Image (cartoon, rainbow, N blue to C red):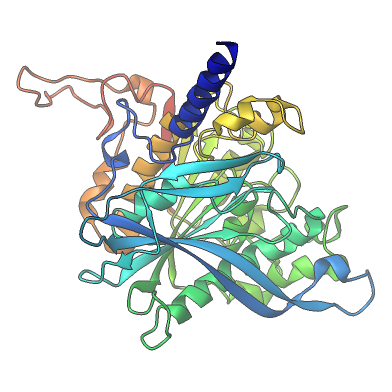
Length: 435
């Protein structure tokens, strides 16, 4: 009898894990555009290699720059056509912040299924994780956007993933180069005759980019935020002042902004508190950008971190979405896998807290990010002007008035956030600044 109870407990735990490890949850309180779109979703894993990239880890100060071939693994989500009898759904087997903990994530995408080509090519969105992280950390966003007619390329950044985390200098140097290299590679693979499933499927001339934490650091630089002179020689800086290649004082860098990138989302971007940007650097940003942050972010900072970047990007049309009292994990990471609740290797708190927020529910934050990202990229990458209404809001959600008549139509006093259910904009602030 005791053995039976143990077996039943194990089976129940497995069931709970599968339920809690879903990346596609849309809660009843989710805003309108968090719901999945009309496309079925396919997913494939590919690798791309940048030949002769500077090898930061094997370059010594004052010595010639070593070089190597840098291979990146990408998870690519795309609009799909399911075969007869094929049902949505699939799994992602991966590791967590504690590499000793392996998990199976569950989503809506179907592995290696056929692309939907009737409405192609689709705009491209690149996703860039934090340090450390992996290509599944924002899989909720990858699947969600693919269901709405985007091709998504989410990067495993070498030297920055859970199982190959290396010295920080590699991430400082490589992050923007990785993002731009993936843009170039997806552009190449999307050309007809490339031999890739992406041929004719993706239009990289209409590209967006999403970065979280160190991914956001890379995004800020990619869209024009040149590094400060002081950052070139910091304690963790790459050797030989290599950050100067993408520094604000470098005229070549200033001319290198990629016109294919039409819009960006930077979530808790790291670096402002560390002196990587100053007024001159941030003034170089001209690409439309949506910043996302928790007001209690103790990693990237808020007032002197993300908010300061938002304020300093004076030449860009920009928004700042704030989750009041959320910490660094605001909106980006998937919900903590159930396995991280248990002790294994590192203390359970560190494995769990990598994904979770002390105040906000993660699935709810994911839904809010998916909602705004859907509207933002539809507006800037597809030209859907009706999506602007999702940003023309009373800045403080708590101050918005919900006033509907008996037929469910807004009255003259209704100012509630478009797409949000009654009471669900409390704790959110959306600010806007023009160039």
